[in-house]
Image 1 (spheres, rainbow, N blue to C red):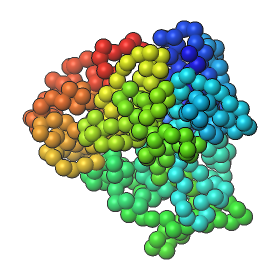
Image 2: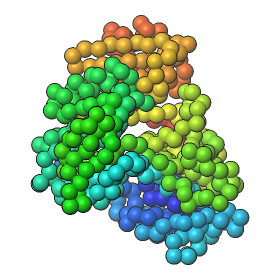
Image 3: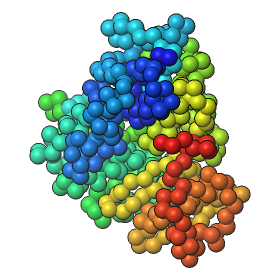
Image 4: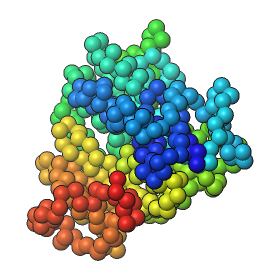
Length: 419
């Protein structure tokens, strides 16, 4: 069996490991545009913040390919897939035959279609080169503007502020990360960031990025104000990397739709990670669940099935967790929604919201106090019936006695393989 994987992120790496656990002999070839594999975009902000070293960005040992007998093709760009002849075409005309193909090409940051978006100093946080550019500019960096108040934007804002840089977040929606936070959570975080010295404005659109000598010097917002900055970080979302699949016969719709086994519409071709379109296990809606846990789970499922298994991916739901100005933040499921029965608690140093529909948890936001996170995730997966009384602080004392981490190992249909 000839296994070919396009992409060296978590989905591709976990898939290769899952294949090798089932198939000890067949060749595995992994192609990536980048100069290394097993690089974690999640760790880039921590590196920029000085919390970890450059080496910590990798989540596998440098000898990973040898340990797993994976043939790496670095700095190679896939330009087409010929599904009829089962061949992958690379940029310089090289063809690679396959029996099983995994597309794990991830996603790319969205760049705003506004004047000045290509000036020096305007970038995203996705590649090692992005981190290197920011770190190189820090000695002369006084002001930074982050366009977008999502997960990455909030994280990098906190890290840059800790380095003594004046930081402003500009979010065009009326609240931060609207898919993740409701209005109260957004206000809580705006206040928290304000107390830490980070200026946040919601409902503000950027019209133009201004430059001097080909480098950014300010942004102009819709109300006419000019805000100075020596770097502008765009954090407005990502789009799946699927352009090279046009004409391949693989269905493309917001990404690559797959079934619970991570199979595409073409036999022998699988997709996993940011590029895959899966079903939300709470709503049934089609989503790009572009998170690290989803990519690792989907890669494992795809790899096992490519090697002859039959494992389904379940409990597929949005899940984000991070530290913001020293405060733990976690959101899962349909956390930004308000339809259904809502349980809320708020204090000076915490905010908790749990969304119930027909007595079942469909989403939650935990800021400051996250001890119930594992239990709530487990309840969502089991679709247990809960009441508001089950969610009070008094009830949480009982819930804390459950085993640590309950609910975090989610994603594979039992019996769960040992991974």
